[in-house]
Image (cartoon, rainbow, N blue to C red; front, side, top):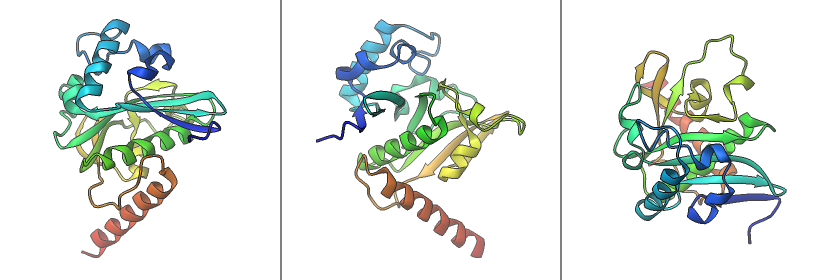
Length: 210
């Protein structure tokens, strides 16, 4: 039974009506030449669910919405092929966007990322990718975690262990190898977080001593 105080929901058509309005009609990643259409998004969601399964996670605390993350293979997100620094890799799941509440958005973003990592690892993906933005140094930390965004703070991704594999201007395609991390069940984000950080530290030590 899921604890109502801290609830993680898989994003499927069954919960589509509970998504924030800006997420329910956003097709930025699904349609390269279109930005919004609730009808197109709902139809896309059903197809994505058949091909991939749940394509995101929603986080609630005490019954209140705290955030949402969207992810999946590049095949269901055509814009990943034409983004600056793209295309995304065929062997990776791609985190495309998050929508964050106003309470601790940076913390919620990290929590949602760890949920996504655990989920896609359990599905057999060898890596996760995301598009990062190299913000100017004078942009405050909290300003980098606006409610709805599709380009993630590169420093944030660096902190999770992502590395840039390609860059174009301020945008970088960032990648985190997860195949060699110990398996974690979706939802066990604390354990996975320790494993991610521990694995990153060990790889960096080996690289420095090589």
